[in-house]
Amino acid sequence: METAIFAGGCFWCIEAVFNRIQGVEQALSGYINGHTENPSYQAVCQGDTGHAEAVQITFDPTIVSYRTLLEILFSIHDPTQLNRQGHDVGTQYRSGIYYLNPKQKAEAEAFVQEAAGHFDAPVVTEIRPAARFWPAEDYHQGYFLQNPGAGYCQAVVGPKFFKARERYARLWKD
Image (cartoon, rainbow, N blue to C red; front, side):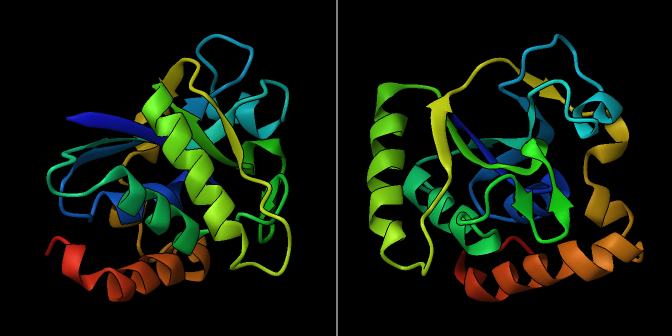
């Protein structure tokens, strides 16, 4: 098993999709690359901790490649929006790829360079070494699955989830 850590706006969206991809053992919502210990959701949302809302993905590379995970990430968020996704604004919503080894760094850099040609605006996704990942509070884990009728889930998470389910049907867990 390998680990990947990505940020792309609200972690509920990212986590919901990646937990449905074959080869992903677990996608865990949390916080990364900030400057405080054991951050809370409230502190991260205030913008004082420097953390990004992120998802730590444990996956089997014989089933799903790191490259495919990067493709999925870029299909479910807008990597050209700096410190925001839609109406979610703040540094905690930044686009990021947090690598755990030199191979991931090289793959991420090559992917972003290639993907940049498919967008009308510059890609602002940060590619940085992964600092400590802090799991988010329990109520954030599996949030979309537990709260599909919530307004935010219907308006924001659901459309991304269903778009990914259609686009990556061959990789989708039933």
